[in-house]
Image (cartoon, rainbow, N blue to C red):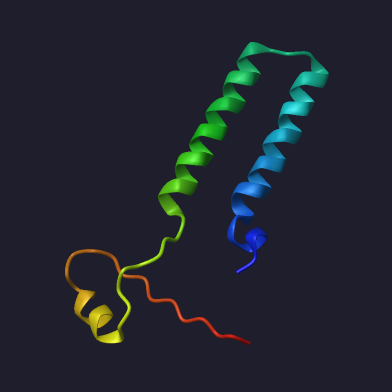
Length: 82
């Protein structure tokens, strides 16, 4: 999987945050704007860490079937080599 595809959200968010920082600095630094931007960056970082897909320790289809309905969410993803 391409590094850009895997980390597209943090890359895109980083570019947007840098653009916003550039606008704030060019207009004249305002403490409230910088604190707001830092807060938005922190919220986006927490959202990415919480929502990013991670690998599973379930490798067999039977184990995945057994995990369904056990109280934890199960995401089944099928990938094609084409």
